[in-house]
Image (tube, rainbow, N blue to C red; front, top):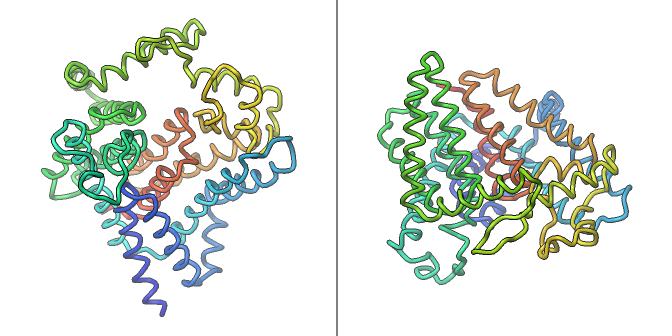
Length: 400
């Protein structure tokens, strides 16, 4: 019976790499099945010891516990149920971290993830360039959504492609596979899709990853760094020249930066001056954080407080986070919650850095920490699931 569950969880883990970039429903089912396998697998003493010895796992349980305690202070907890639904996904960290997974399974998992995001990128390029029609015209069970380039919403899809680009670039540069020509194709397709669809986070992550590897592999040659950075800028200039999506995104971002220098929270959109919601969220969040910096305003309080007190944004009712993970945690459960959040990634980075190819492995958590400055990505299902999945591979795979 144990061998059956062991074999089943290997296949389920590989399938998770296929469905995280394509289907939230299937990802939920696979996570539930893996959790059942984890329970039926037994070996609780070994799993407990593993969890107890891992500081980043303990930090996760500490963060969840503090959110539970956060129900006992503050007057607004309207979004606490939503919050705990997101926190429940973090329990997948210790599940995958202690589940018996073979090295071949981990390897096939990353391959399945990269192939799936490659296919997703090809489909997105085809739709964005009007080579093919949106998928709902071919499959009746899919609904049309202009914000979905292939299978998932553009800002999440864009980030997954940027992460896939970083992984492929690492595998190519470190010669981890004999199929390097295929990786070149993957890298080109990822880049093309990233810059022909909306989603600034993925585009910024692409640029930061490229700059990191340019500097890392050429740190002894300033001239080579300058040459390669010039090539990168030339590529971005071509993208800016020939794609309206990137041009519009860059224009809006430039206006935001220019206006925010003067503490003017406005930018141009469709020819009109509108409020920059991220500026307002950050400003108003910090004002209220200063009021209760130690304990925060309580679990699930952000949405209710902003709905009641912030009148500058017409669509504030639809937002229950400030588009910044650090401010969000600090706002609701105080400085101790913020410290626990940061400690999760600090200990993960420390553990990864001690492994072979550690400098490349830490790119994953470092990238996710950057992304959390842009939005509350640690509580967004598909991206959190992707991060947990990829971190499990990065943490448990032994480099060849």
